[in-house]
Length: 458
View: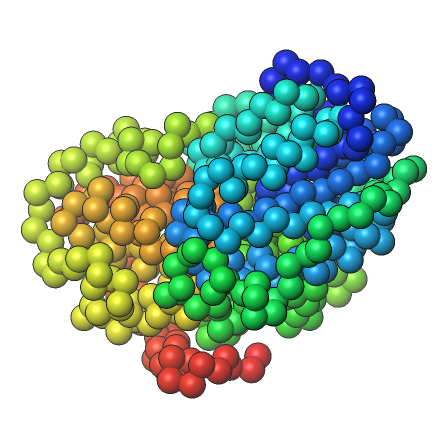
């Protein structure tokens, strides 16, 4: 466990504290949660009860109905699971866009804590963890191999892969179940429910982005999604993962991002299912572990995730050499946002983002590459991609999606043949999509979804 834990600030224990406080920032689950387990062990050592605190402010970037609903849909399940363990749970829904509202309750509860534990998450996305004036720990429960075990930024998958594989079996182990010696007995504030008074419409957020047509939040939905993939997708994954209408991918990224499920428990279940059914799961596990943790490695060591300055020297040099290349057509952000380009496949991918809150991974690469090609400058292209991803995607504002966006500019890739606009950065052509995938079937599926609001049965 020690490789997952870092102490924040110099403060010590508050001996007269009433409880250990676990501030849930990223991992909204009881199962397979190293931070919750560490907090429980600490509470047992101090002979204190454990209180979990989670908040949903209106001040996070692009706060909207879709992102709010996906969090609110999991509150009741989290409360029930924690109550069963004897853990107190407070969910603080702040309805106003005041910064003071977002921090006030957290400070109030930390002031009575003997110690504070929280989820470790790259500070490039969340900022620094505040110092509460009491012993505070951040625990990495987002990666299988703890991020700090990889001591430097890795250039690409080939450089991080052997480092992860050397450590993988050591960390690919189930998390011990939470057991508390002292149960929570004090009265707690009422939890928000999804009735008319507490729906996102009651909050000062963007109401123009509706909930996803496909994804609902919560632990149970994450488990159903994994179960469906194990039964219907894993055996087809290697062959059909790049064919969107085959629906062979896991669709777990929104649940991973919101912490409803962990990559550790996914990997353990996939490996066990593959063993029982004599399947080969190597390609899926490569994406889940090596590629995802490469993205976390980048997010931890990069100074910022919204800048081309973090790209390798060869990328910045080749983009600079082609900065003045003619771009025809060119589109403004509003045209991209409203899926108003000349390319029916690109428009369908954007509509999938608008409707579902997620684009199939292979078409998301094409989506991003074309924004690079059709924008006035690389910087404008990056700003457009981040805006669309962070506003509409349920797996947005995440190390994985940020790294995937910068991959479109050459991050974690190698030089390719020289060409206009891209220079030596990898290019993706519409003809390749037509040759390798069933574009017509995909466009028809998204068109039906847009017209009817109904998802296809798979």
